[in-house]
Image: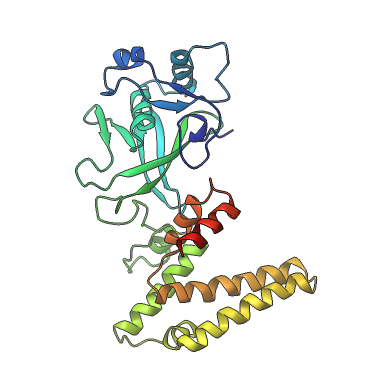
Length: 288
């Protein structure tokens, strides 16, 4: 069972349950938190009503299955793209610090000290949620990076494809571990770059759309209409999925022309999670 951060820290995304306060005793015990207190949401699996605030916090930290060195694996994941950004080790102090600061914090085994991702590069990972796995021995920091995560300047630390290495040993090309949606976005971006740089390459439907805005807009409208018809004409699920794929593809080509990334779209959606759709539309109308 995963334990999301809204159960353990106050967020603006999914406000629920009463918060508890990290007490001064926690500060003095660990000796690392500059502020004397901060707000978190009590974890439902351990937040028994009969427990005091400090006991709840300590119980949460105690529930993690730290190894014989007091460490656990922590994986940072992009909250919008789903991309795995990096992996590191944490101890209970690093986890508590991440909860308080909302900056991804790890423990350096070589230096034997805490380190905050971005403390030298300013490419912080701003944590929105924290999840514990079912065995309580690994953690996910779900957050928004301020910039490239890898020290090489890459978006993530995962860009070496095993298939690329094994099947094309003579070819050296970094490939980010992407989901289907972002692989498609990357391909569209490559086609746009080929046009901008006048690179010779085979013709493609994507290029044709990128070069003809009128055609592109007509296709977006056409595919959206066909998607609606799958509902109106009671067509099967596979047909709806196929039409939605067409809507996504053509819409993403349009976004590429506008220099808008899917990540930007998802960020807008994420910010609306805690709002009523009706109220959000009203606020947009009033602004206009």
